[in-house]
Amino acid sequence: MRKLLAFMIIVVLTVSTFNTTRVSASGFSDVPANHGFYNEIMYLVDEGVVTLTKTFGVDQKVTREEVAVMVSKAVGLSGGKTKTPFKDVPSTSASSGYIKSAVDAGVLSGFTDGTFRPKQIVNRGEMAIFLAKAFKLTAESSTKFKDMSPSMASYSSVKKIVEAKITTGFSDGTFRPSQTLTRGQISAFLARAMEDSMKVKAYKSFVGDAGSEIVRDGWKYKTKANMLVKLNQQTNEEIVLLSKSNFESVEGHFEERLGREFPIILYNNDLYIPYQKVIGMMSEIPSSFGLMKTTIKGGKLEEIKLPFMSYNTRERNMYVWNDRVYYTVEKEPRDFEPYYKDIPNVDDPLFLYSINLSGGDLKLESTFSARFIFEDIGTKIGTFPYTQNHKSVEYEHSTIYYFNKKGVFKYSLLDKKTAQLSSIQAKDMIVTDRELEIIDVRDKKHILKK
Image (tube, rainbow, N blue to C red):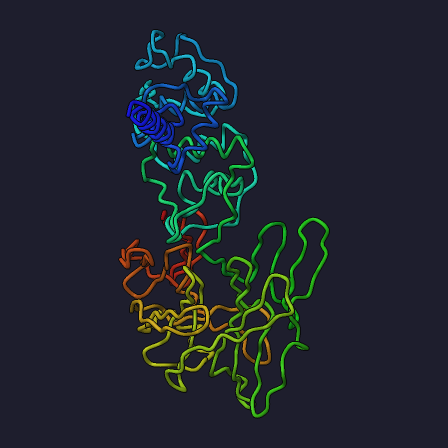
């Protein structure tokens, strides 16, 4: 009986020891071995970035003070108590030396009121800025997130840490730069910045690039002389991705697939090319449009089947965003006429539709009015010198900018909200990273901040 009792006690102790080890294998009671950030936190412990204590506070919001200490240790900056230029960081503070070192190294900075605000919570956008500076990251990913634009302070830094495979966005295509961080999350980012084996996999972009020329990763993509080409920015090497030989001949009408300066769309590793599908043999005016797709390697050609709505449908202003193709259709379809170019005060009601990347799942996204002015491609193709796009509609990341007789507006694809930016009567618009350049009907230039 005593032998049996002793055996049972040994079994219980063994099981208890095993369970305790699993729950707190890290030494932190709140970081069990099955925790999502266990490996990253233990790596930081081994590297001396984090010190073992009873608890880690893995789900607590991380502060500027904590980031200064952890990042300074991660990149080998000195600590120790010292005098700082900030009135809210006394020399008696245990973090004073790390804060001063991080500021001196340009990783963090203080505020104009002479404070550092050590207890202020850090968000994901700020984290990107700190890490990009601390690890001297320069290369930027081509990835774009639905909720970020070049006008944001953290935009470039986010692209740098994504390129360095320190983090990715969320599965819905957002990065959420204003979302606050926990101690566990900042630990994961730091470990990935320090150790290659912990880096994340490459991430896809949810935002397309559109224009007559698109530059990415050292290559320029454009159409010219009935070809789709990519040009190496350093060597000037030119590679033909598509040419007339890739298309079958048609009877009864003309088509123009790769006109000079036709707009193209680059979405991850695919190129989408809107084209003039049916051009009258007598009028030389297009009456129907199509959309084709190839890859950045070229050769392979796929036709995107646009939903049939009517023979008069004009699919204009195409764009790819969040795995969908967006385009506008006029309420009262019009053929191209030269005089529209000279009457910039004519508005048309437009329907904004979207389809999936295969051409199905048609959705009506919004309706708005825009000026009926075509983009001029400069060099005439036959007697027709325009693309199918309106000058009055421009896409930028997750926003559509447009103008009509009431002024200049923006529409968000994220929250489906419209806002008026100005009452200027415009006839042309150029969208840059931080502003809109508007030409009014009297040819006067205006700059609007986004």
